[in-house]
Length: 414
Image (tube, rainbow, N blue to C red):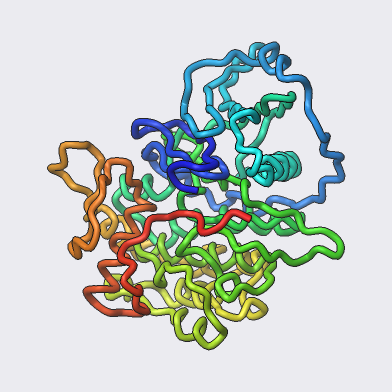
């Protein structure tokens, strides 16, 4: 829920004046800088192992957290939680501590508390270099303390905009790491269900930051006899066709969202209209026709082939995350080092250089809707240029039904 309701504090450093409130604990944050580490290894060779570990129903008493950690300044505030910078008293290592106040929750929102427990369970199971790490968890009758790895580099897409240039081979390294994390997650029968650019953060603003998937607030652990999900949830623009058809779904919804992220990374805009209207099968095939904007026509055949196989309407025909990790473009074999993408420049155009608020983003020229853009990140701004592309060129878009420009928001929680 964007901007209120069951919002929780962000776990990253709030680089643009504080963390926004959003169910599941993520929102726009500081802009990443520096050069992305282009080492070919990344998470590619990470061995997935099933973690046979009992997840405790309740962790240690709340007071224990203050024995182990020093609480520092507030990094972000949500409607039911606060996020602090904290320091381990023994190692002096920094973390982010999200403190969830159970008393602040509306009794009607018990499923929200249940989902926090699912998030904790999932994070205790996951150990991957490209997935955020939860160091500790403490629970009492009134609070939950989640001690997390602190993400100081901001959003991946903000980093790309600040960097200014991005080659296909550099993009391939990024996609390889994210895909490796997704394949690992799926090997443990965990689906994320809210993959989007805002949930890809960098560890630091240094020379070689690592990219990590965050926010498992909508995740689901599939089990024996429970290999499908039916809840209609996620973020507009990243919802798979089967979800919009209100069908049961599986891990394939994450692969679709990955395809949307890759398209944005390579093209600088969303591939399809981002409304969340219910569709029938025929409507899905009509809506999701993959086309490329004029400024992305120089994409390599390998990149276009990958996108066509990730953004396939029929879930069974879509690549699995494991197979996507083996695709020649993802491995880097056919990703050209000298083919520079237009996506950083396309997103950068939206910045208002003369704005009184530094870092503001301009609404696209349609002027259909104007709002304060001071907290817009690159991943939010891409919706504006996507709308502009649809209206000005008419390439590859269904009508928006008069809805205008949408910002990322959850369509339903449970």
